Length: 483
Image 1: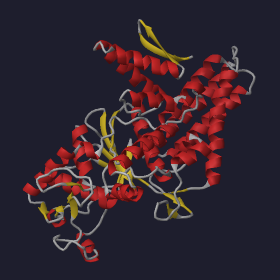
Image 2 (image 1 turned 120 degrees about the vertical axis):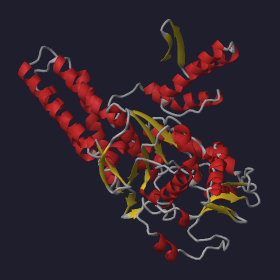
Image 3 (image 1 turned 120 degrees about the horizontal axis):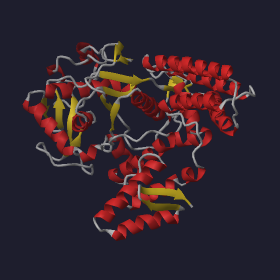
Image 4 (image 1 turned 180 degrees about the horizontal axis):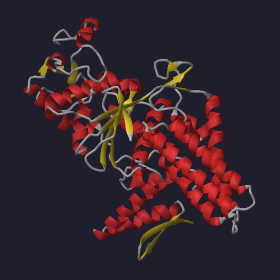
């Protein structure tokens, strides 16, 4: 399997010492609703993560949430709320959008505010090693001290220095030196530190959290806009502190453009995830993203999304039609031809995905299988064994990139938000799909019963019963069903 490494600018063989992959993807700064640009990045790395799992790797997926930042503070000041309430609100809204997109829940969603001690320790290490210095406004990383600065983005240090605008902070040794710790201004959220009350700089959080949750950082991902300065600064501070390479592979997805321009709040051309989902549904949005290679730009187009929605329904209709057919003995020859064509398409699908996740080529093979199955279904000589084998491969490949072609029980889908609300009442973070949240509630109920907290275990059962979900205690474990 080959992946494109931004650090080297070429495709490289994916090589890890075992079958485990540590993957860290930079998440959102939670100060507003997530948009289609976020959706592309989230879906790209969800597809990559799922496919790596399909190919036999155990992926430890860490996805951070920046819940303290200048943008959050500005939003709070504008709305009259606290920064904490703004970040909590939009963290919940972000997770809701991720569930809507069908994003597989991360192994962990670390938040910046929950890792302040780790950040302070890292800043102290950089100060002690001579890579950072203090001013009256905070602690800064001295870029000129790190000899490898610019190796990810290809930026030249001398050009950066000459091109930098005069910084308002005259205490900084160089205008391009970046903040590790910002001393608090009146009314801003702050934490105690050796340098006074303040808060972390943007870049330091990822350098602090990735080593806490990953024994080895194999793949570091994010949007192209993060290459510089965020990932460049992350490399500088991490490698200056540890003396070791931060990540083995760097992967970055391209932008979503609208009328040729990058989608951004400053341009006022934002398309929110929930607005797009309401109009087209998660399958169409995922298919839209799969239609473009992850490294290239994509142009948002209503017609393209309409086509993606229609195409997704065609893929799904193949499954529904196959389930409606009552196969007989079938024709052995035609069944053999079907399986032969399906197997060839599977090989090409894997070949495309193994070549730096070439989803457009892989998707073409999925449609080829759909066509082959549809042709077989209309032949009038359908055999059960051949049909089930072909359908199994079809669903297997679709699932490897997160395309849900089997319609789930409608009741469970409609109750997602009700289930999430029950989870919140019980102190559980409602991340993931309906099934994963229900499993978390069942596990919480079992823990309550073991600790003889029967009031809580009964409360979970009653809350779920009130929204039409029955828990059944069986010998093999707890099962749930809809009323």
